[in-house]
Structures are given as C-alpha cells and as structure tokens.
Image (cartoon, one colour):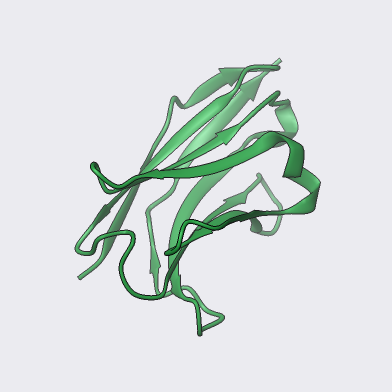
Length: 120
C-alpha cells in the first residue's frame, strides 16, 4: 500500500523560498508508470495543480508558477521535493502530494496535506 506524507515549515515570509517534502512509502518513486504531483488548495478556493515529476524524471509545472517552481526527488530517501521561490501571501494554501498512473487521469493516492502560510 502506497502512502504519502508531506512536510513543510508551516509559515514562511514573503519573498522567501518555500521547500516542501513528500515522503513516499510502499513503492520506489522511480518504479512503474508513477506520476508524482503537487497540488494546492488556497483558502476558499478550488484545488490547483502545481506540477509533477514522472517516473522517468521529467518535470512539468503549471505555467502560472513556471518560473518559481522546481520539483525534484531524492531516490536514496524515496522522497519528493517542491520548491516555490519568491512566495507571496497568495501562495498560502494546503499543499498536497499525490500519485497517479501515467495512463490514468485520476489520482489514486494522496497525502494528508501540509498547511503553508505566507506572512507579509
């Protein structure tokens, strides 16, 4: 059974770089057709996709965050990392990591989420 768990600083200040990690248990992150995604849900808004890294290492992100987002992995620790640079209060959200099969549009595994508040 695959399990995901996000972790982060909780609060960051405007203009800082936010770093989040997602620990993956139950499968190696480079196996199969896994697509590992980051999503976020700002307060009182719909969830939005931030970006993803595929089992082969290719990384994609949403155009609106393109220049500020980096997604990577550490295969020795089996974890994913999201970095979001130059944060503003608009980046305040609950951040989730999720998994889907590259041949499926839906996510089959989600982490519980980690809340991030950007203070001005």
